[in-house]
Image 1 (cartoon, helix red, strand yellow):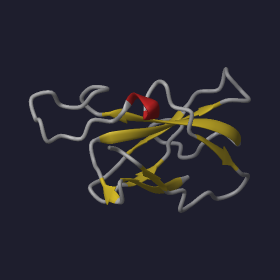
Image 2 (cartoon, one colour; image 1 turned 45 degrees about the vertical axis):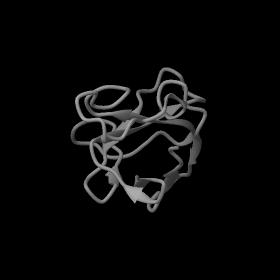
Image 3 (cartoon, one colour; image 1 turned 180 degrees about the vertical axis):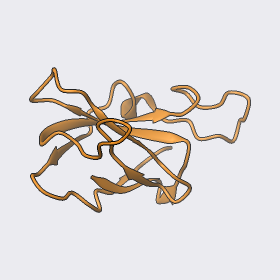
Length: 107
């Protein structure tokens, strides 16, 4: 499963996108790091790509900390509404899920 993550239309690297299954709470989440163009590929493990079929909670995690790099005042801060408190959901369908893009708003 792959796609592109942008904030206010601009790609951002240094964040990880995590899909946590809602219908199967004992199933491990899938995660993928965003590259400089905002592209990601979700992985179950280091070698197995994919995500659990069904509804997933989507959260965004800052690479260095949940609130960004405090030493760089210009660094992107991922709002809590996209982190642990995320209400963003995506339903993974059977088969290939490509171009699963998210453009999130950050004030």
